[in-house]
Image (cartoon, rainbow, N blue to C red; front, side, top):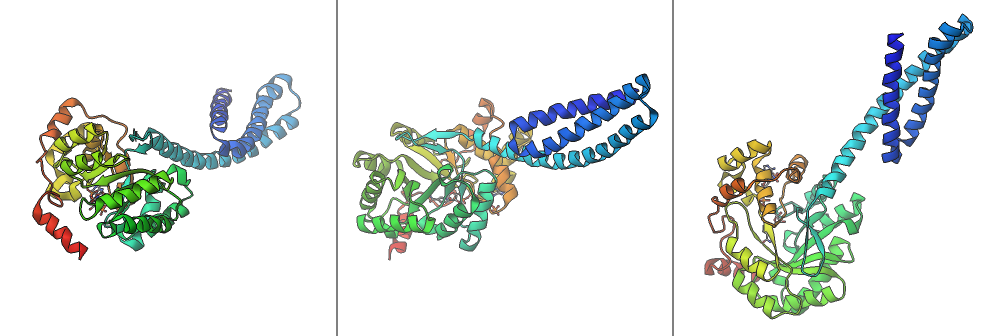
Length: 384
Ligand SMILES: NC(=O)c1ccc[n+]([C@@H]2O[C@H](COP(=O)([O-])OP(=O)(O)OC[C@H]3O[C@@H](n4cnc5c(N)ncnc54)[C@H](OP(=O)(O)O)[C@@H]3O)[C@@H](O)[C@H]2O)c1
């Protein structure tokens, strides 16, 4: 009796769970219908055994038949529960992923376009590996992809987007015009080339990769494509504040983003102030300083990470996000892609932020200053 009653309670619980899930997710409908039939029969069998079999004495043989049917149905129910558990795992994995995407913070550019604040960068991702990496990134929930003409992997990005099954309008695609394509005519042609390689009719954000060569001409070509609807937002990359201010005051469509080296060792404090004045968003490239200065084992980051059960990588990204920077970490490993996405469920305190602020060296640790004549000279060699 006690056993039967506890079974009834358990099954009623299961039934309620099933109804809940079938309401929230249509995929459960079929399995729930099977479950419901099995459950109803099962319930009926037990009730028969409990009440009719014992109280009304409807005949031992009939009660036993009903009971036997109940046993068979419970076996089928058990199998359906196994199937249900499998589906449940997939379901909750999907919910978690969707939730992450929903949790993804966005930032509004000065023309009203919403841009995700965390994306996936493909610098130094080999062209033949790029498609697999971007597909993995999209599977992991990334919706912002950062590439460039100079990375030689725009085709891989285009293929991945096409194969992913993710709608184009759900993806924020960024690419950059390389300096050898600067000047109005060349830049105009290169925009068409990027569109072709990326297999898309529009680019979400296009940047001038470096502040050298005829960038005014290239910028005019971007402005034109922007007005034609081929680009949703335009901006620059690696522009020091002086060149950015000059550009912003001499163009029609103000730069919406400046993508610069930014991480815990190079925090761009002063540059951010000028970008804010121009309502130009800061996009942080190399958010892990490409692993320099032992970022992944740094003790300050590790100590803060221990409080939240997060890795150094996650603390480094979270810090930049809380400084309102867009981040585009790169990795070729799917587990790291997921880890780098998992930064929206905690918040650094003011004390944590102040401590990380002290790690700033005030200068580049990856490429050197774009105002250093030696760096400029090196870029000039690329134009030959
Ligand atoms: N505008 C520009 O001039 C410019 C310049 C540089 C970069 N960018 C953009 O910014 C993106 C990111 O910068 P970046 O690629 O230079 O460097 P990054 O993101 O700072 O660092 C990438 C390095 O970190 C490793 N890594 C990633 N996640 C990790 C984790 N969770 N734990 C441990 N190691 C991890 C990667 O290794 P594995 O790949 O082996 O995992 C790789 O060696 C680029 O892909 C590109 O889109 C732009």
